[in-house]
Structure formats: C-alpha cells, structure tokens
Image (cartoon, rainbow, N blue to C red):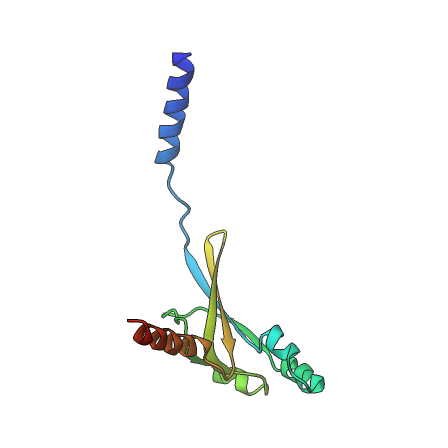
Length: 128
C-alpha cells in the first residue's frame, strides 16, 4: 500500500512541474450593437430591425487593451453606414489554443458603466 501511495505522490509532484499553457497572441473583437432585450422593448419593431442591421463586428490586433466604460471609435466601419463607435459595456475573454480572444460588447450611444459608477457613488455617499 505504501508503494502505491508513494507512486501517486510522485505523479502528483510531476504534475506540478508541468509548465502552464502559454498564450502567444491576442485578438480584439468588437461587437457594436444594441442588446436584444433593449431592441425587444422598442415599440416600433421596424426600427428595431433596422437597428439590428446596423450592428458591426470587426477583429483587430491592438497595442493597448481598452477597458470597461471606455469609448471606442473605428472610423473604417463608418463608411458602411453601420455603428462605428460607442462605449464598452461588457468584456469577455476566451482562450482558444494559444490565442486570447477578447470580445468587447459596445453600445453605440449608452454608457452603462459610467451610469452604474455614478449610481454606486451616489449610494455610497448616502449610506456613509
């Protein structure tokens, strides 16, 4: 029994020596759109469908990673007539092999993050 436990311990120690997966590159993916639940709430559904068609998606490699709440503008998309700027309201990271895919969900006119931060500060101020 001791030899079995010793063998398991040796395997466990060897597993800790294995190097972690090294991610070599990053791809920044931008989805500029009106969220589905917001489009669904529009009374004019023809307008909601038109807004959905104006959504944009583009992949890039950037030297600096944008943060939540920041405003992004991609003028090359502007030529298509689709949404080309807005505020980042959600960020998703996905590791795909040796590539980190960073997806930014961008709202073309509302800045949810800044609105939330203002509410948070107001709440903290009132409850101190």
